[in-house]
Amino acid sequence: MSVAVASGRHAQALLGSLGRLARSPLATLLTLLVIALALALPTALRLFVTNAQAATGNFANAIDLSVFLKTDVPLSKAQQLAQAAQRRHDVASVTLIPADKGLEDFRTYSGFGDALVALKENPMPHVLHVRPRSEDSSATALEALRAYFTAWPEVDLVQVDSDWVMRFNAILEVLRRLLLMAAVLLGIGVLAVVGNTIRLEIAARRPEIEVTKLVGGSNAFVRRPFLYTGVLYGLGGALLAWGIIAVAIAALGEPVATLARLYGSRYLLQGPAPVDVVILLAAGAVLGWLGAWISAARHLRSIEPRA
Image 1: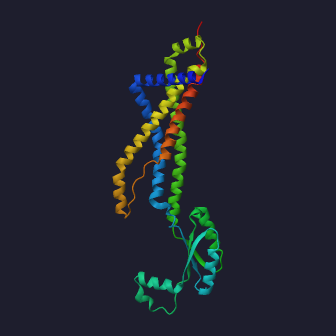
Image 2: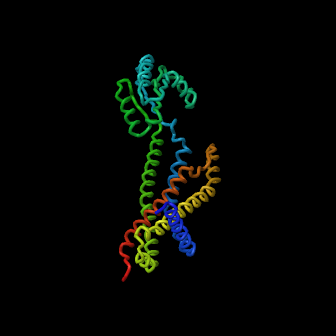
Image 3: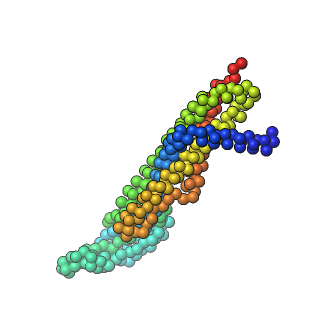
């Protein structure tokens, strides 16, 4: 079979599938809407996670540790400890806050400046302000860093100043897992919807299929238009999902911008990136094709021409 003939048959099958979908606009629209909702939900959850990360900047500069040294540790020893901490591969920067500077800041900002005049000795310890590298800011990495400083005999207390950041990142990780689960479950739902639709179409066209097989049509030839129908359903549902998300982004853009301004930010809600749109359309087309293939392969085998 020549390439031109094969291309012509594929084009004929594609146009025939488009025609059948156009002849049942309401049923086609309802099927596309179900597929669109199934594809839009995980995409919307992914956008939520992406926007949450973008709005917060992943709090890359918000995670740090305060290492409080014992009050009897001299400044020279504190400087040596700061240099030792700086040499660690997972530490981005170390700032030494001497006890005198700590007392001065406390006197300035605490509101108890007059009461501190009566103190004969400085009760403040030297403090190491440690900022880990952004790639070493996970809960496990921070706990390892905390354990490292706690083991120093000169250290009195190690405080992670941004536990709330770790909680936020843990929530985002839960949402990522939910995104994966939702994508799998809703992808199975798309397969079921497309498969059931193709099954009904095969049942409605059973006499035509029997005649085609009677004159020598193979299962692959008979299956071809149903596969195109599945791809059209999946691709159309993905396009409709993209439209639903675009409308949602447009509706929420101004309220989100207003909320950001109230917190002193100029953040604008981000829509799907081009790569996200490509993934959405590809996922819709692949799921549509796979659902149609499974259904057609299963049901066409049971249809044989009657003598």
